Amino acid sequence: MALDWWSPMDNSWKIFEEYHIDEDLGFALPNPLEELPHPYDAWIAIAKNLPELIKNGQLRAEVEKLATLSIDGLQGHKMQRLAHLVLGYITMAYVWGQGDEDIRKVLPRNIAIPYCKLSEKLGLPPILVYADCVLANWKKKDPSGPMTYKNMDILFSFPGGDCGKGFFLVSLLVEIAAASAIKVIPTLFNAIQCEDLDALQKALLDITSSLHKALEVFHQIHEYVDPKLFFNVLRIYLSGWKGNPLLSEGLLYEGVWDTPKKFAGGSAAQSSIFQCFDVLLGVQHTVGGVPSGSAAGFLQEMRTYMPPAHRNFLHSLESGPSVREFVLSKGDALLQETYNECVQAMVSLRNYHLQIVTKYIVIPASQQAKKKQASEEPSEEENRGTGGTNVIDFLKTVRGTTVRSLLKEG
Image (cartoon, rainbow, N blue to C red; front, side, top):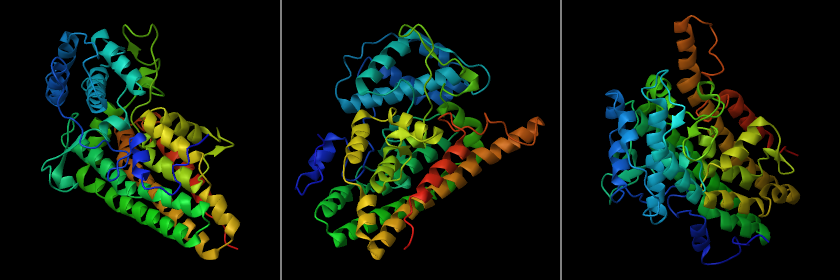
């Protein structure tokens, strides 16, 4: 039976803690660790010098020299998350090398064995995921200062200068801006239970305001992420080995599995925050719990790339009362309008995401195709997001589903 954690109670945040949700940061990991104890510091040494090692052609040799370590010394959630982030960076760098056609199809056992064991322990796949490179890859320069771009940095970098810093930190700041709406959820569910229309309306307005803030923060991407660097450099290191013609069979994790495995690269679809609002507002990407198309199937699959606590939170929301059905049943014009404004804020975010993808993937892919003089149209491969989908088709479908969730007047 679902836990009625939205019932009136003083300890809502105690419940959220069980789902690894922070009051201020939402799904982001609060104050991530930056160092691992000996002997795992050998992993950190490589991860901290990735761009240099890649540039000098030494990365793979350094990785191959590493001892095979047991994960038993990695104690506590934060230490394990840091190790997963570090091994994810090392794996991406080892596979993609200098970002040319010299790729590796086998991950050596000295990395593959601890990486897969740690992944199993954390309930995450053995590939760099959004929960690693965005949610657990940050620090404040001045610990007592604000959570702003200027006062923040990432822990590890790929080639491409500050492009990765811009991409990961802006993604994190969007996530945190939207997270202020999570604390409204118990109030919202309680308002439905008590049939308190005023409280429900206020809760929906608060969520809309948080989504507007998230959109405002999203604009910073233009300032901090260069489209050419993103497309030609960073995107390669975020790519996975599922739906990727360069590794069509997948990656062989030596000493773990006998056959290659396919995992999708990091993707915004792995963010729990926007799937959370879809569930909350009744944006139905599924029909009767079954994915209604390839976009819905991809969103469901991406949940398996989220930390299990976050996945469980989404599941708990699905067992909660339906905001959409309640608003419909009341037939209150003002309440419907407020609900629609909330859904429209999600539509605006998805419109903006489409614009960003056009600027950072579609246009550079088209320019690359023209340079190759192969065709005027970029290939499907070049139009793929790092998660392995045709990103424009996917985002248009998701936006369309969101638009269809708007309640009709009258």
